[in-house]
Amino acid sequence: MLLPSYRFLGDTGVKVSPLCLGTMSFGGAADRDTAAAMVRRCRKAGINVFDCANVYEDGRSEEILGDLVADCRDEVVLTTKAYFPTGDDPNARGASRYHLVRAVENSLRRLGTDRIDVLFIHRFDDETALEETLRVLDDLVRQGKVLYLGASNFAAWQVMKALGRQRAEGWTPFHVLQPMYNLTKRQAEVELLPMAQNEDLGVLSYSPLGGGLLTGKYGVDRRPAEGRLVENPMYQTRYGEDLHYEVAERFTAFAAEHGYDPVSLAVAWVAHHPAVTAPIIGARNLEQLEGSLGALEIDMTPDLREAISDLSPTPPPATDRTEERTEHTYGNR
Image (cartoon, rainbow, N blue to C red; front, top):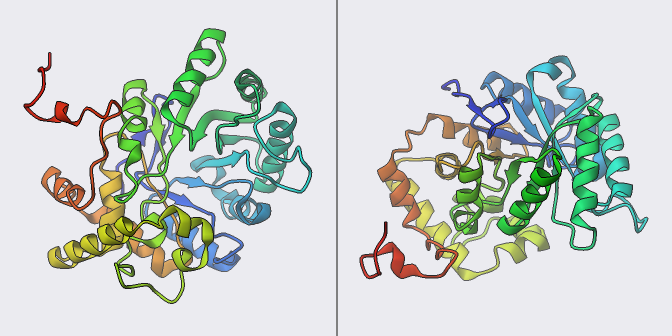
């Protein structure tokens, strides 16, 4: 296994590994012993950033993660998220001051730490005034409970609206994005990733395997006996179009033809987008984890990445003026 080359997380000055371990399976599909084995393996591979959320396994994922990194807390970057419901109370959700203050206190307790390195708002809150959310986030940073702020599942305009207000008020800005990005879900290429490059934001993208779609187990007429895409209605909805399975089948054939593990290749393709700091990899066990770690050993040349990109549709530009990618246009500067 090659040791990773670390890169800066946006303009924070913090160096992180080119892969991030997602811990959504901790306390669920991965029991504590399995989670411990995966953390040890990732630390051995040089991974120093671990992603979590307060809703993963009703908080159990945070508890396990905090316990497992207690002996190396000052050597790792911990992220967590808040927004989605954490209970039946109508206010145990959202990005209001009322909820976020309690959410952060509870995450700190479960993680067994005095600070959250990166706190993501898990989704844009359509009902809470943006100024309220941004002000409480700044307060949490000033209190030392949070070091850096991130936005997950935001549209580009929502990020820029927030950044504009944060900069105008002198509040702590967002430094990191967490969008979904894989070979079958490329919408982030249209505005989010170019915006991240332009604004020098870090990007910890999630779902590089498309919920398992790009592992080699799926095709137009092929499904495994178990997995998120056959068990979880949310993932079935997210990847329900026939096109996703057509892309998966083409990708699996390409990987086999060129001698690659499809899991390693899918993760490497995401990791080598110039705007992506580190894809978030996840696993239920060590065997699954090894496939994703194999991405560190792939020489993802520009030609190889382009060949893989050609296996799925390139999303149109934000203006939908596809002719601007060709010679059939008014011209460029």
